[in-house]
Image (cartoon, rainbow over all chains, first blue to last red; front, side):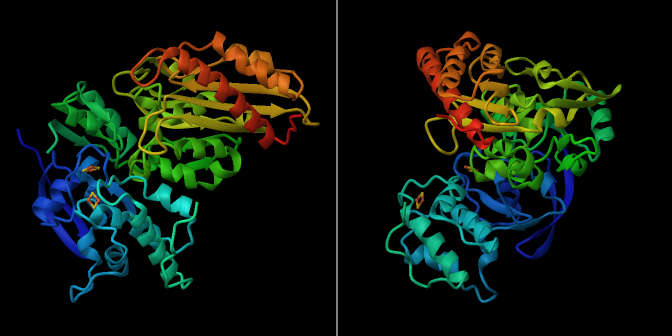
Length: 170
Length: 294
Ligand code: FES
Ligand code: FES
């Protein structure tokens, strides 16, 4: 017997409603019901971070999050970072500029972790950034460029420097 | 889609108890970082689930009037790590849960779920063993509290009777006051890895910081469930704060632990690591307590 539930949530700033199968993951809800395909299905067991989104401001791997739990929550995916004209955000631009994207499969998830960090509006050490970005597997870039893009955007937003540091310290 | 037979959502502890009583086959799902993965792997496929994730009353850390630290079972690892009471009174617990999985896992994973799985490698468990934590369980008969050592029955099995759920973890004042602790996780990777061995030590020093008044040490993965190394504790009690005490304390853990050979690590290797990290964690705990090791 199939079981359904009506849920209401805010997705990328818009109020949404959906009648969902209770067996759905949040990844299923975002991709299939809301067509937000930046949310990737990588491992589907919470290991790789490709499906990472913000729920009430915190990062969650949506593949191991029941869609029914999204009821009443505020969800942000990569699509929600674009401005009304479709322009991309500074962190996305930094990923491009620092060559932190190759195949791009890990990118939306990694950027959402960066967004969680940037929203804290504080200066993190290189080591802290590493720890905070450690829930993402990237098979292409070797991570250094990702860390550089996050650091550059953090410094810029804090008004500390507009230049990307040449090399990560430590 | 997960292979779930039915899902019941509880909004309160009472509702959870009645749903669990009504559906005796149902399994509890908290944050789901273990349960949902096991469903994907087929291990728990087709399960009936009672979700307790929506019970907000089970979230948060509080200092009770008698000085007991009360951690709601659904408090996430990242919230424990960031909590001011934890940081001030038992920072080692924040450090230990800060080593679980990766950041997203620490946002969804709950301390109650981590202990209810009955898994020996749970990063929170050894530290809770070392703090003499009390597990609070609520069921059809009301609330009962038992020491964490009694809560773990065997690998994968904890003392939860039909209709019961874990609602809190309590650390009494006498267990934490005056103690300082340190946790060491030995694993291959810094993130997203399971401990090959976890060791949590806390000590209480005398007024003049020269004598070990009390020492507690607990391991994860040194046996099928987390365990205390009691002979090591006895070795250290009442002894002077010096290098010799550290060495004898560390060597004594071999009387208490019984790790096994597995593809992750050999028994002999685990025993070696157990002695080394016991010494290091003990040393660090003593230093944090203001002791000087000459
Ligand atoms: S797809 Fe969710 S963590 Fe890999
Ligand atoms: S860019 Fe290909 S996995 Fe990260």
